[in-house]
Image 1 (cartoon, helix red, strand yellow):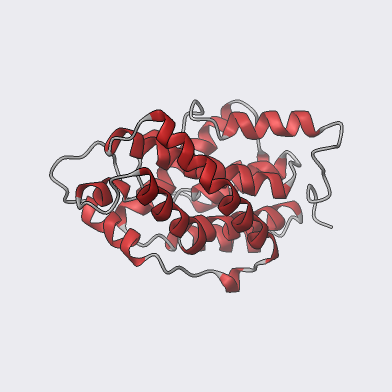
Image 2 (tube, rainbow, N blue to C red):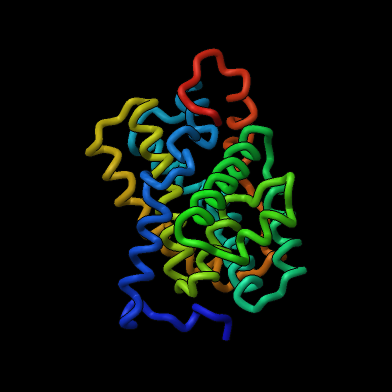
Length: 239
């Protein structure tokens, strides 16, 4: 069984694992996540997302059929390759994750956050496999979900909880962007996160049973929004 998968949150070491996940995926961790909207800023501009209900529907689709699902599968695949010391497979999934981005801004979003995550982890917590992977991929960065996966594997964190924590942080960051861009009230933002919890759990569970052959997306409007954002006249976000 791959290292870390058997770890349970009931295990005595689970407190340390939870602390790492909360720290690494916190808005305070220096990856600059708050500067990206994943194309959401354009969806607000063109009138698609103007309410909490519309936001929840938009993000639910991204989680189930777009980058949320793809990132979760990539994270699981990279975690297992790193845990099992399959260096060639890990390199290949890292290359694929970066190439998979559908637009220039989305590549910036995943690549820049991944590069910042590698730097922050290397300078603080340490993750030798991740640092080695970043060196092999240079000058390209490690895509963000792969960076989180490899750091988690290096620290023997539980895979299931890592995937769910990653997706929760992903959704929470986009809700925060909507709170500023729509704008929505903080309470409406929290309701959106509450309503996305079962979606996140389902996507995370499905990713654990998936393989790279299951990768694919059907969120074309979100992808187009990320392309249109590049020429949007007034912008708060980088994507």
